[in-house]
Length: 141
Image 1 (cartoon, rainbow, N blue to C red):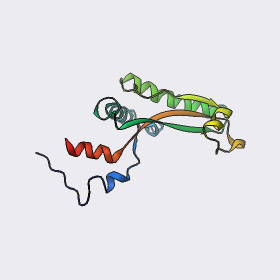
Image 2: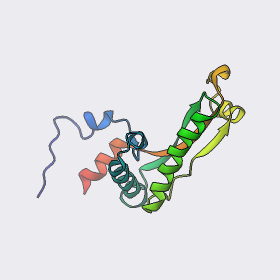
Image 3: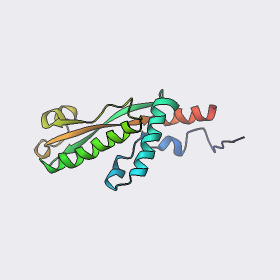
Image 4: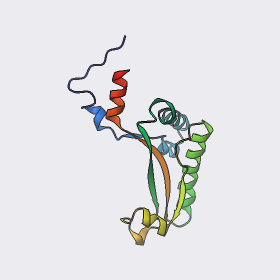
């Protein structure tokens, strides 16, 4: 048997102050930590597809680009690898793939970006969870 102890109300402490992100570890790709990325993508996929699809939803991220050539190629290849790793593990379903946006489209998506510094953007997806409801679901099981 397992017991759960909470000083106050369920999900009122640290659980309610999470980033609410269920990410696949995109930033770990830059550090070449492929094992951690695979593990994070697997967990994200399980939450999206089996464990809590009613609580986990896709959320778009916009990566603004400021340099014409190298930045789009560098960041774009990283995001493409991220998508490929997710699909290779069978955990890419439920999230749209990344997109390359031109300057005008990026400004339509995020008009607050500095026009003079922007050359375009990359849009990619991770996931977001309702952390308090997730905790309550776990408490009830």
